[in-house]
Amino acid sequence: MSKHLAPKQCDIFTRARRTGAEKQKAQADPDLAVMADTSDVLPKLKSLRTELGTKLDGIEKRLTEVSSFFKTLENNLTEIKNAVTANEKRIDDAEDRIVAAESRLDTTDSFISSASKRLNLLEAKMEDLENRSWRKNLRLFGLREGAEGSKPLMDFIKDMLPQWLDMTPDTPFSLERVHRTLAPAKPNQHRAVLIRFLKFQEKELVFRSTRRREITYDGNRLYFSEDFSAETMRQRREFNNVRKLFADKGMYRGFLIQPCKLRILHDKKIYLFSSPKEAEEFYRSVGYGVVTLYGSD
Image 1 (cartoon, rainbow, N blue to C red):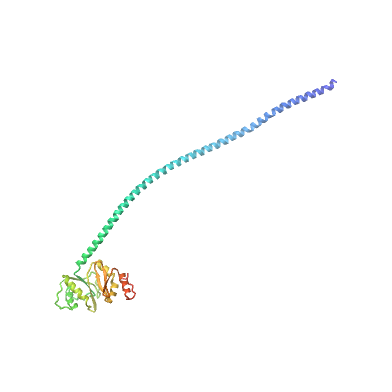
Image 2: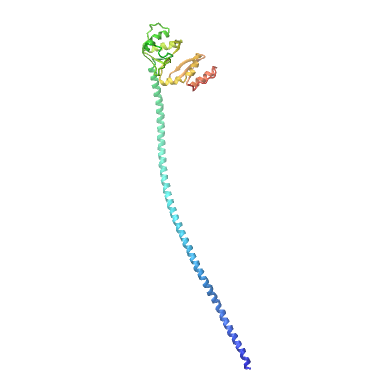
């Protein structure tokens, strides 16, 4: 009987020991698992720490760069602010100078306007004095170059004036000088002759007499006109074309001297024209046809 019980006891003890060992092993397995997990996590944590450190270093570097950028920007803004302040000062100074310049310009404009009026007045007075100094002069047009022959021109004019004016040969004319104008001499061409009388009354007598008759010499029509300043002559020349038209109609009555105006007689009334265009328009308006003279040579 003892032989049969011994194996059972051994089996029970064996199972008991095995169960205890298994319990111990089961208790040890969680610790081993935790240790295994910890050994796996530590490298990852180290790697993560390294990665985070690298990223933090990058962030710190970027923050340093941003900080440097903002400092530079702040410096630039300070420079811009200083430049704007300086420009504002320069603009204020420029505005002050402009105001001062405008004030001086107004004064200058006023002075120039006054000086211009005085200059125009002085020019008018000078022209009037010049015309008065030539009151004893007559200009003769139409006398061919060399028509006087071998005679001095003054002697020739003295001899011919009584004939041209139907006066007695011994009619005295006191001439101060006689010469042709300064235009270049051309054979068989006309060049104006300037005649200066010693007495204004004689000049007026000759001029009035020539206006009442047609004078010819050597087949050419002779014209006498009063002598005036260069400016007055220039103004009168502008009327040449339209003046000839009125003269052909018997309407031309000379000029006013100051200011220069063309005098026309129409229907027993005198009309004055300050410009060739006005005279041309009047010529058309009185029914003498359409002409284009204004601005022509």
